[in-house]
Image (tube, rainbow, N blue to C red; front, side, top):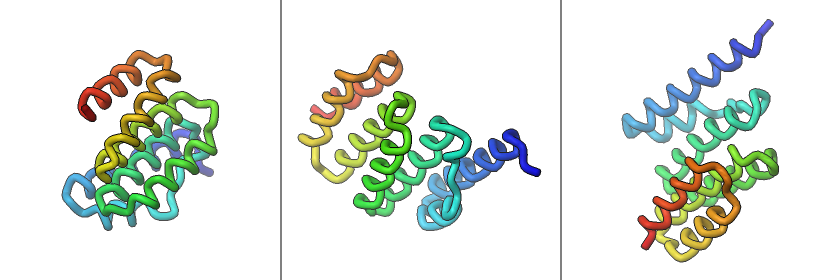
Length: 133
């Protein structure tokens, strides 16, 4: 029988494998390593980590529609979790920047900045806004 610890170790394995493959410029293999894997049952933090990585891979593959869909699904799963909503907004800003839609990226970053309470997220959004100018 799997315990919570086993599930967390499994999550770490999937995350580290996908990160390694992505850093080794193998985004297709990185995506395949996350296929059929979900960390939803471990809570919003783990779910965000796995899905944020999946979004980065989609971005690398220039599959922007899939990346945006993934973020929407994630936000809908955890509507009241700042640890999901703000990192998701940050990922959205980065995707929009990668797509070249700077004005929309600025709008999303500014709107998120007005909602965020966590100082670390606030600093990340401030940095993104400066970089977008």
